Image (cartoon, rainbow, N blue to C red; front, side, top):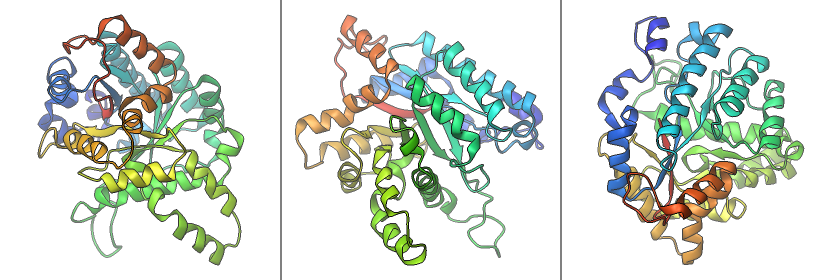
Length: 345
């Protein structure tokens, strides 16, 4: 945060106001673990905040971008090393300086620091995920069994209409972000990413955006306007998604289970971004899963087993920790409880 503040035009890092209002974002040793224990959560997957793109001086400078990601990823690795049973760390990558710089950061995050995945923050101003820049990343992630998270980054300043000065009514977030996630997923599928890398693991945050609900419409209109590509739409089912639907939404989660391939719906909450009512995202996501009209085994898979498989080596590590006697600081006895939660640092 201080590094980005130093180089920002107004002396403030992105989301600095939020950080001051949400103790669980930064106080991982205290407030975060207490929140997890209060909600019966065993392990959080930490996706880093903030991303560096809003600070263009940093994002577009190779040296500064690498330094910002190094600082973030080292802090992430430290958090995991202090609480290996409670946290899984995801690495931040620079996306505005080309593929070579991005891969330097990837190798440091994964091979030096031992983080368990990387996140791509994508939106209207980003390099599209089907750009050749990402090809080496996808190859390496498949070879190393490194999961990728897609997270939208549309800013509040991105206009709803050209005649307005900025987005209104939080549309940039509530609708814009699920749209941006969907656009990224479609670009990846339609460009044949999963044809080239069929074992690549990519999760579309926020319930897979609009994809589980609008793919038939997309297929129809693609046929109407462009006339080809329908077969590649099947590859959208190869994505993973989480249950971070921001409320009690069992029907949405069931739609995800029906659309994506088996085992690809992961329990996620977006905690602790429910700052207006702390714990709301966790409570409603859990109630949504419990309300699903599916068998107990499938619910348990959503709550934990799917995520453990998705996480690969990190999932294997957690299984061993659970078997050896439980969770540090949780008072548990090795049970996975209500599962892993996709969260934010």
